[in-house]
Structures are given as C-alpha cells and as structure tokens.
Image (tube, rainbow, N blue to C red):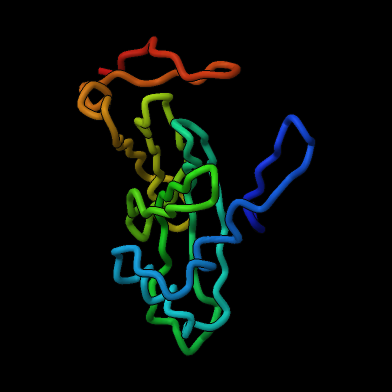
Length: 162
C-alpha cells in the first residue's frame, strides 16, 4: 500500500490523513541508525510502502519498508520495521526492526496493546523461513506457543502451536 494512512470518521463519513508516511517525520530520531539516516532528509529518491495495518488500544500498528532508489546511496540498506501511531496522529514510535532479508507478513494487535508480528525471510525471491515475535502484556504467554486466531472482527485464542 502506498500513500498516506487515512482515518475514516464513521459518524461524519469524512476521511482525514493520519500519517503521510514514516519518512514525513524528517528531522526526528526514532532510535535506529539506518532509519534515522533516511529521516535526515538528505537521502534522495526515497520510496516507502506501508503494509499489514492493525488497530487496537487507540493505536494504529503497521509495517513499513523504506528504500532509496538513488544509485549514489546504494550502500544504504533497505529498512523494514513495525511502527505505532496514536489515533490522533501523534506519537509515532518504532516498535520493532526486521532484518534486511525479512519482510512483515502480518500484524495482529490485541485490545490490551499486545502486538504479534509475523515475518518472512526471503532468499532469491523465495520464502525460506518464517518468524513470529510479540510485544506487550501477553508477550510471554504468546511466546509459550499460543497464537491469536483472527476471526471476522476480533482475534481470539484457540490454537496452541507446539
């Protein structure tokens, strides 16, 4: 998905821009060396794609990939990460970084603020490994092998992977 994140007010039917993109936070430091280089504003031809969006606990959680298309900056690696932002458009945070060869495949946000992130590792355009990591209050419980099962509207617990 390219373009800004938009929020729909269901009462009025109006849509507003929540976030132009992670790179719109130019001048900020989010705590990762590669990402902070992209945010300096000196890197030309930056392309950003957002994916796997989830909403819970008054936050929007999403995966983002950032890369430069400029040949002069070939040495700057692609950046993949998971971010959160408040529903009011403030408090953009880097939640997790994803290794260069991996991409965010799924983000499930639970009502208590726990987030489950699934990633895929690629080698020559082929998936060779999948990982799951979790953040928040239920992280230890989920690390023990329990997995949220998305239903039509809310994740439910029902499968133990072991």
